[in-house]
Length: 255
Length: 300
Image (tube, rainbow over all chains, first blue to last red):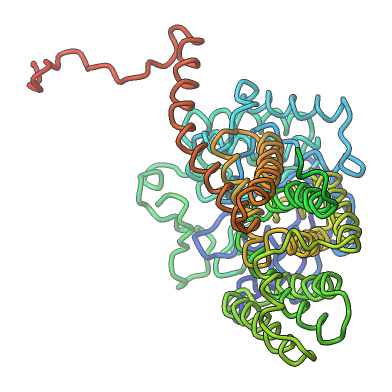
């Protein structure tokens, strides 16, 4: 197993007075694809946002590529796909302009060279959006929008991809494109941490699943496979090694 | 072109052009981050600076610059720390700034609200040579920031969270935007006045958006509109004896309305051209499903 790329130990975080993370441990090794699962409000988005420094951490340690996050400066190694809401600003912007901002971590003083423009084009081709390069992002569907955000993260050729619900509100065709893109990245050696609501078409790619509930890790191991009756829609996943007497683990994965 | 014979008109036109460039150049980032009214807020705060300038017999332009930078930084800090009640804090800053201006100017020896009027609504023809120097220096700073750092400012204004993960100094860039906006307000103060500043920051950008799909084109067209209306408004006011600030703002709004009216047919033509360029592509209208007759009855 490769060296740890992400390492969170005993991480706690509060939003206002409400504890959202209550001491979570999460390690992602080089080349691994880890899914962070859990119901709404379980803390999975907060965990990812504390990782990138968007949410302050009240206790615990976070390391990226072996460097404490506070001292981590090598952001070109990280590609981040935020939960979709923020991509369109108040002014029109083309697909290329949005994806180019993902390349800034590699461009000194914001000056772009030929190689940078080529990387932006390559990222757009990877997600199948090269033909929409000059279109305004306002004119895109939800799935296309998400593909643009993923291209933006890929533009810097990152070693680690962090994606917050990349499949939320994405049509089936785009889901397939995204799964294909991710497969190529993983084959090329990328490490991936995905926040997911349901495994969906990404399931075959995932090496390990970490399930959060109420800000605690309740499962860390092979992804929960839905079989037989569990695969029926609306069925809540009851975890086999949940402590006796505990209420069924409601991950929301299949609901 | 007799108006160019007068030194005061030369100064007025130079100041007007610089404002026409800088106000939309900063405004586009404010509009992008959906803080279109920030310029208005800074304008209110700058009034305290003008009042202080009179009270301390210092230059009102430089004093307004200092106070509005302070106010802009304060607004940025409120945005970071006071998420929930940020709007209330901002309101207090705005009206505190305005009240402070009125108070200080009336405390100043021989000062009255009449002195304030030229700053509130602009007084282009009284721009002095030292004002021009100040305006040139400040405008150079604004252009350097808005053009030189356009990719960084675009990234931060588009998606702050993502920008942080590309390693950009997000807080520093936000502060720089606020400071640049404050400087622009004081540059524009003599031309359109503090109460009308925000119009030149926002309306050219909104007008340009009617025609554009890219940020770069929006920037270029907004600046072109800004320069056209400030020159047009200044010359109109010379010949028609109307206040230049108000003329400029009304002209800008007229441009916005004209471009909005143009935009709809333009978009339709663009869509038709696109459909024509892709034979066999998506049809423009839904096909009537087979088996459905025109009167709406479905054949079985």
